[in-house]
Length: 264
Image 1 (cartoon, rainbow, N blue to C red):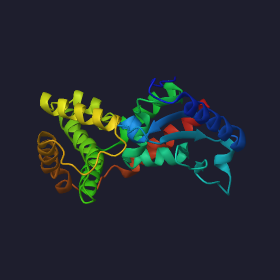
Image 2: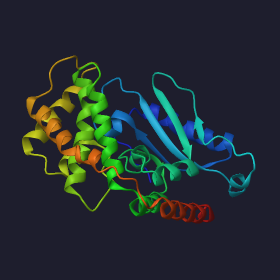
Image 3: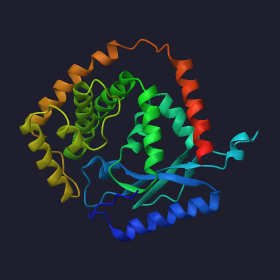
């Protein structure tokens, strides 16, 4: 599976492909899933946005039986253009079992450099089995609150708007704990009003052609949307009772991980 929009720089994509090949060769691992994260995958890139490639990798089965396991992260050199690193499958599965929203977002990125679709679907089914909606909603609620405490700018506002849209999506889809990754899809698949979606589209279009959006005030319709969703989302803080499924979830994650190693 490969999904690369035409807006991505082909020479940069080629370098990312080479880095992924290099990781497999140098570390003796297999990469079944490599995607773009960050503002490009979130649906609001700037002209100078860097490339945030994230990948999941699998080691040979024997490596997981070692008494001296290796690091569960592989990183490549970081610079102004490239931010390419990944997680061992074991780390990713543990994080999914804990309801880590970042791990789930990687599985739903609209930009895929390389991917085994069947692998992605199996991992999504695991997430659907074990992830608690309250943990995901609480994550987005706290991200939005944290981003609001920093220096105000139109650029930073996107980092408040997207989690607020994720909260709206979760409220509209009570059967799922796995919201889409990108802002336009979150709004399109929710009950957000047309004027909210249109205001977001206009702001995204401005960001796409402007290196720095500056410290202007976001559209009032979007400010109201964010405020309403964060107020509504406070219920997730109030519903913070510890889960009684921990042992069940861990057993399910172990079972899935062992089965996945057998597939590889």
